[in-house]
Length: 218
Image 1 (cartoon, one colour):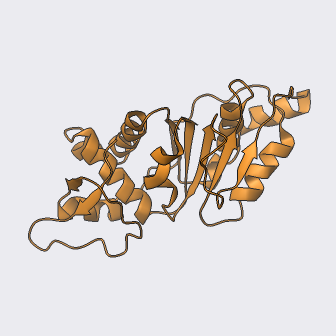
Image 2: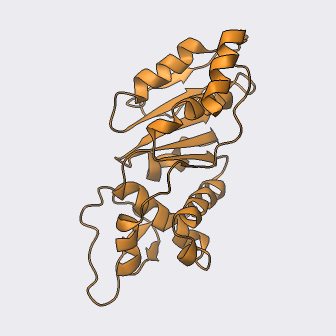
């Protein structure tokens, strides 16, 4: 995946002086107009690409942990770690559906490789600014999406099935939203990032839980 430095070009170009994160790497050049559009474009109401919500799920205490970790913070990251099949992705998905009305944008990324992460961000740009993004490269769209995220508060990104924590370095420091990461990796996460180790115990949902989950789909 390409890391990004943002440059503005053209008459009256402006530096993104309010953008708080400097990311080093190859240069992706965006015009001043595009940089300004990342500030000015507003997300349509309820923008999301979440997969469907599972009908039955327990993990009440784990959902509470995510809410406590993210719900009271202006910005933050939480990692859900565990072996394959223990329910990491399902936990993140249920949380995202349950709290989707708390965010302007909820975006799910299959994050098994840097290429997948970049493509997902490119897809976000396509939803936010389709006229331009329809003819732009994936690298340009991903760069624009990162600018948009840094300008706008109130979003949730889910990076599902991360293989290497280093792949997320350009994204977890973005100051305006929440990030949930799921991964089998138990090592190499920053000590400052709250991490939940998910065990393999069964977590069936009772009928009341199922009804609550169904109500969040409405």
